[in-house]
Amino acid sequence: MPHDHDLAHSAHDPGPQHIYIYSPASAIRDKAAFRRGIARLKAMGHEVEVDPDAQAVHTRFAGDDATRLAAIHRAAASGADVALITRGAYGYTRILPGIRYKAVARAIEGGMRFVGMSDFTAFQCAVLAQTGATTWAGPSLIGDLGVEGEPDDIMLACLDDLLTGHGEGAGWTLGREKPRADGSPAVPELYVKKAQLWGGNLAVLTSLLGTPYFPEVKGGVLFVEDVSEHPYRIERMLTQLLLAGVLARQKAIVLGQFTGYKLAPHDKGFKLATVVDWLRTQTKVPVLTNLPFGHVPTKVVLPVGAQVSLSVEGRDALIYWGHAH
Image 1 (spheres, rainbow, N blue to C red):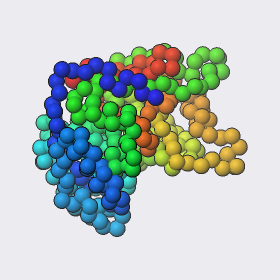
Image 2 (cartoon, one colour):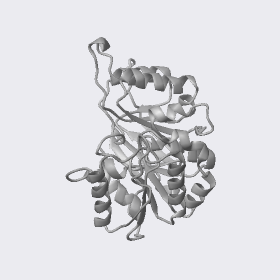
Image 3 (cartoon, helix red, strand yellow):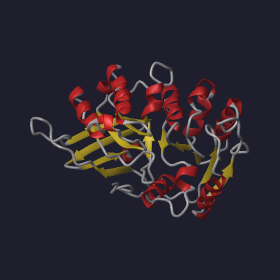
């Protein structure tokens, strides 16, 4: 679990933030969660601006392709501090060619932080590949801030760190894993200095291979997560990245949370740990586990495209980007 989400707070606190809410992918079905999420951001003291087409519907999407592209471009032009998606789900990859990346990069250069996860990975990878700009892997409005009851404390703390400019890193505890065949630790002590952090949803990331929207990162730290994908499918996608040479070009591979799948009698003991053990036999790149990020309530916020340092000591792991500010 995270233990150092706010390693060192700066003296600067920008106060209430202007947050732009928009829907660049799937249509909103849970209107109550939408309202709860907005109310929570306002209760936190922030100014919330909602895109005029945030609740548009066109089949499964939040409006047709042109409508959703326009929402992205309005977000970029809004002057907001943060552009936060209502939800992820399918819809980004089909509009990637229509995004005005220079406008998005200008907004980011001006201080805007684009935040989201899941299929938002397509947007993040495309922005990184096309411009080199940094976006943020973090919560969505409906799935995280709009939940019934209280949102996860750690997620809220990490989001608050982003909004206030205090966040400088994320620490967590690696999973308990059996040693390698030679008796050495599954993850040796490790220190990686100033490597580019990138990744996100594994299925979406893999779907971008061979396109202009796949970041060609060398010497990076790749993090991945997914939902509703059986371990054999996870292995198949990791194998594609392996055979394409992507994994070998990294300094570390960080596995987040893989949830929402069901094992079957046919598996006969084949499980996610089997995939991780096998992957470690196929690459010399360190494979870390248990990053608190994915389709789970407890999630950290990560700068996709930023230069980070990564350290592992025992079971304690830390991704640190404070030096990037």
